[in-house]
Structure formats: C-alpha cells, structure tokens
Image (tube, rainbow, N blue to C red):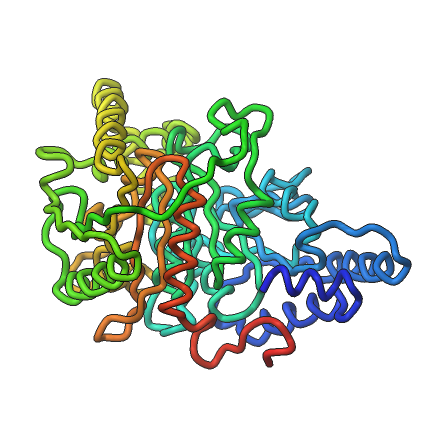
Length: 465
C-alpha cells in the first residue's frame, strides 16, 4: 500500500495534497478516538503543494515514501512541534528544534508529517491515557484500550486515519497495540535501527514498526535500518539473509507468572498449530518453567526499566512533582527510586543469562510462538476485570523478554477471541533473522489474511473508499 501511494504521487496520478487532505479529514471525523493529539495542518499542506509542484515540473522527488501522510508518536520529536510525552511536565515545553532520527529518515524518504499521536505518559504503560491528552480508545471497540505505548498510532492506523505511523518498542510498545488493533507489529533485532541520543531504557528500546501489510513493514524497515553516530549498539552492515524456521516451539509463557486465561490459551494453541502446518515443520510444546526456572526476566525488566527511567528525572523532581503525573507513572517512577544498586546490577547480569538461554532455544532455525498479550485486553484507562486500579503487572504481558534479549519478534493478526477482542500471535526468531521473520509474516498473510482496518473504517487509499 505505501509503495502504491508513493508511486501514485510520484507519477502524478494522485496528488500529495489530496492525500494530506484525506488524512486531515479522517482525523477530524474520528476525533472521538483520541488517537491524534496535535496537527501541523498548514505546514503539511504547504509541503504537499511544494512536492506536487516538483512532480509537475519533472524534478527529482524523495523516494520511496513520496507524499505519504505520516502520523508521529508523541515521544518522537518533530521540528516545530512540542513533544509532550503525554506529561504535564512537558506540555509547555518549547517546540523541538529538529526531527528525531526516525522522523528524519521517513521525511527524507518523502513522507509528510501531518501530526502527532497519543501515548501513555513517558511510554510507561500498556494502555494509552495521560494527564495532557486523555485516553485513546480502540477502533474495534471503544470500551477497550488500543494498548500501549504506541496506542495512538495503532488506533490511527486501524481506523484508516493515515497509512503510516511511528512507534517505539521498549517492552512491546509496538506489538501490544498491534495485537489489540488487528495490525502487524514488528520489533527488529536491537541494533538494526539506530537509536538517536540516550535512551531512557538503556538496553531495551528500539524503534518499532506497525503496518497493515507485510510489504509496508518491509518498506519501513528498509527506510529506517542503519547505524547512526552516537549509537554504539547499531549494526554497521545490512541485515544478513535468513530463511523460514525449521522448527516451532510454542509456550503459554516464557516465565512462571501463572496460567493464561482459557480463551487466550485455546486461541494460542490453534493458531500455533496453523503456523506449524503452514510452514510444514514440527511443533513442540514447552512449559513456562522450561525457559528460566526460578526467575523471571519479565519481572527483571520492571526492576531495570523503573530504575533507569527514574534516573532520567532524578529523585527531587519525581518526589516534588509526583502530583502532576498519571498515578501509574508516579507508581513506576517511585518504584524505580527505591531499587538498590546491587539489585539493579544483579538484574543486569541476569540479562546475559536470559540472552544465552533464548539464543540456545532458538538455535538451528527455531521460532518461538507465544501470545502477544497474556490476557484478552483491558479498558482505555487500564481497567482489568478483577484487578484493582494501578500499574499493570508483568503477568498481563508477554513481550518484555524480547527487549531484554534484543531478539526480533512480530505480532501477527490471528483472529479474535470468543468475546471479540483481537488476538495477536507473537513469533520470535534468532538474532539478526529479521528478514526470515518478515518472510514468515508474508506466508501467514497469504494464507490467513486479515481486515486492514476496523469495521466501519475504510482503508486509507481514496480509490478504496
């Protein structure tokens, strides 16, 4: 879809201005979703007009995203726009002086920034709600959250507001909302896409991708991959080739955080069998205790991420400004302040054991299949039936270990649960096997196609209205 849109603009069969106007109209029509929190309407109209003039004059134009409207997650800087991070602490910050690396690379490829999408405060939660912009709802069901932290981007994409969005992934921030919104969510191997500046979560964060088709995922990865000055972890060479897995291991969880709800477990079992049958490879079932007996990398993620995030702001600011924060943000940062140095360092050292263990599990072309999320879903403000309000715990997630270990993972749209929530099938493959993971996703897409948008929301290209 992205390739076709860009080609249509580049050859003059449609205009960038028409695509921008469509995006703006869709955003206005579906403002009730709470997905888009800021617009640069006049600036992007001028940029679209300039691009259309260049096309008409036969001048060279940026490719391969020529004229494609882009919505940017509010954690990414866009020059001239305020990056609020969903926080009162930054709501009145000065406009960014330059684009974040991910935005700069997408713009250099021809994308046109229309506005910004919502997120939880500082990307901390798995639901999208914050003190500045409020909650985002899921276009499949307004009683549900689109997930987080890239929930605004996922809701916008699933509602057909724009064809291209940005996302991050520090613990599933692209995969969780993709699963809840019926989209593809992709976390590349850490280092494939360079990071710009000092990440809040030192070892965990990478740019994530969301799309409605595998071709769109591949195009985004092509544009965004590559090293950058200042990131010592970035891969300096192109990704190696990789093929489809020769073996599939399925597990309800990779640590012992309790059983899955029955409907999630049943859907996982059926869809894992579908995948193994599609690939023509053996399927092995593992138990959660087979991976990390006696400890939980998911819980270690909370220890490390909370401590590292708290260190970004410091004790004084957190303690004096906690009343301005979302309650779960305050809980997370306050918890981080209390992590002793020896506990933090022990968790960092255990991370290497987690890396070694999953490297061994995935050796010889193995794919690991788990649910993307370990519960059916939650409300727009994080409401989970039977749970008290507060920070969502490690047991509802299934995505942090991929960030702990740096491995590539994709959330595949895999139907719906009996109660209607969308289900994501998460597939993890060996380090640097990103190309093979995309090939697997393409095979799944061919044999198990999914709706590109939520019911009642037309796809973005005008020709499909």
